[in-house]
Amino acid sequence: MTVDPTEPLNQLDVRGIARALSQIADRPGDLADAFFERAEVVELPPETCSPGLRMRREEGLAVRLLRGGNSWLAARDRVDRDSFHDALRRTARAMPRAPYPLPDIEWPRWSQPLEAAEVQEFPSRFFEALRLRDTEISARLSIRRFHRSLRVVGSEVSAGVETESFYSLEAESQEGRRGLLVTSLIGDDAQDAAKQLAARLSRARSARDAAPPDESEGVVVLGPAATAVLLHEAVAHALEADLLALDGHPEGAIGVQLGSNLLDLFDDPSDAPTGVKRTADDEGFPVVRRCLLRAGKVEQPLADAQWAHRSELLVAGAGRRGTRHDVPGPRSSHLHLVAGESTDLFADAEGGLFFSEAERGRLDPASGFFTLVFPWGQRILNQTPGPSVGRATLRAHVSDLLHAVRGVGKEVHVAGAGWCAKDGILLPVWATAPGIRLEGLEVGP
Image 1 (cartoon, rainbow, N blue to C red):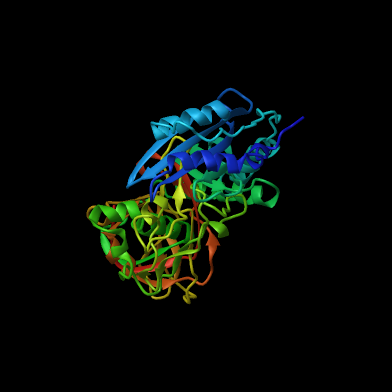
Image 2: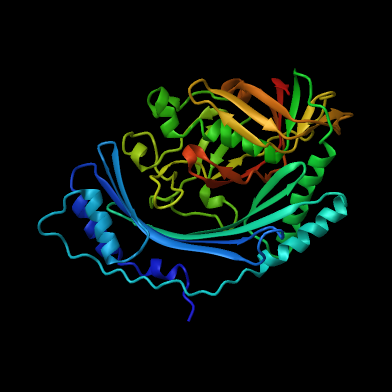
């Protein structure tokens, strides 16, 4: 008999776990929670490696105590009564003399057979799409399917079961690596992903001998994917409560005019693509449609439970964990830039630059200086993207960068999915965004 990965999470003795947690959260302002997770990764490596699917499954729990701005965490790689009791004891350091009875935790072992037909079928779709675009490209493709089920039970909150399921695609050629995160590889979704990944390789090949642009200041137009990377690195990271606290109190950012009044930006995990939508964060708090920027002005920074309990202005719901072994922190999940009124971002942009995708971005939280690297781009001629240019870098202070926005497109696209590696904790991030137009920024090799 197969077991639904979420079934054990639905059958947890929530009341018993909450009672046990209340024993260690026994001081005013204390918060304690138990985090339960099951995770599965299915991988299809390149053909040059050992053939066939590979699978890794794991499960475990973590108990955490927040007290007076400090955090204690104990994680275990099993889910049973003894593991929960051990984590509880190590987190509390000293248990009461007459504790509540520990809850019974029934946790069936994995028994599902390995099934990943969509993963095995994708390579033929991808290589056919690549052949139709460029017969001279030779590539190595790897695919990973991620699935995670989790549940948080706390001394103050108790959330339902949350699930995340998505795919990571990576193609490597002489021009380098190109990756893509998608939430489905079924039917038309698989065909679209194959075409998109093939197009990225083909564009990189066509631009491999192109010279980088000379250093200049002019019009720069970003496609939705590049816009999403910019917003994640320059806005979402800049408005995480723990990074804001490096320069003082995070609440001090509220009301600051950070960018152009054309920017209305939200973080809304409940509106993320199907497969990664969330109703609660990794601390069990309800997610919110959080307005990061309204008309360019900071409205609500990203905060987890620890920062929200320190402030009357910050709101919890943006706590994320890489795994049960990681302490939660404030991170974005799904950015949404509201569409603007610009119908032609290329108007009066002769000689400017267009970048459809960005390779990486980096924000220096101490100086506020931001860099965004593009693997290739195109020169704008006759109000349309034209000849290729090579690798380029945009450099600016965050405030100058966001005030340089002179146009926001009317068409919003799902874009910008990628991996975020803050503090070494790798998390998938998602976005929907239109293209944007920037003016007066420094772009060069």
